[in-house]
Image 1 (cartoon, rainbow, N blue to C red):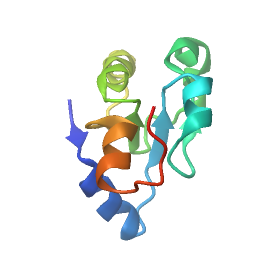
Image 2: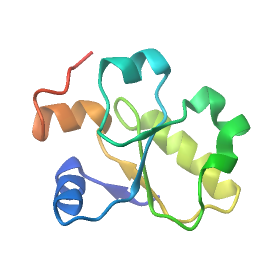
Image 3: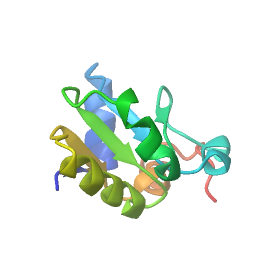
Image 4: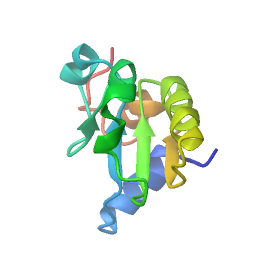
Length: 105
């Protein structure tokens, strides 16, 4: 499984690259904090909403710490998705290393 650190993602975004940022946390978690411009599809809703994703577009999948996102990637890879990247450390690492204004929970 391909992964990316929060620093690498921040650099990618700073260069103007715009992968889909897929937040797979639940709605209440997303309400606390999220990455700007992300697409929210909670892991629990993914089977019913997978058609909203484009398998040809690079997608960075994230959750709180990187565990649920890894499960989502495995599920999507089984359906033929290939351009998936797991955000190591999730939104918690983003708050710790990139943007301390992102609320922790």
